[in-house]
Length: 98
Image 1 (cartoon, helix red, strand yellow):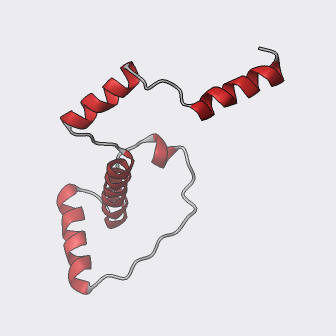
Image 2: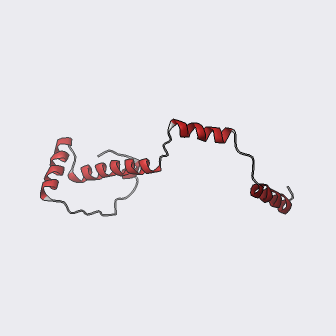
Image 3: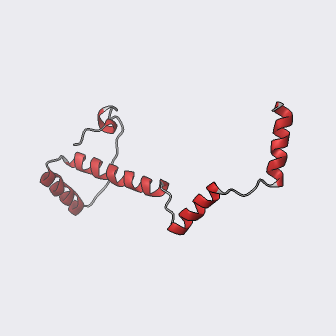
């Protein structure tokens, strides 16, 4: 099994159980044997890789070229502040003496 901070620095005290068919277990065991890992190592590493990929896919924002250009344009050329923002700034300055 790969030695990463996630699996060497933390005690393994949580348990995970799953019911699988006999055919699935045989396939998993065969894959583990072919890669020189235990069944547990194969399942843990494969599941962690998949989970990491899924989380990254959901946390990453992807924009088209047009969306990227619009985003950059909005940052570089922001719209002037509206009345509510100007009012809030004025209240802040009065309260803080800035």
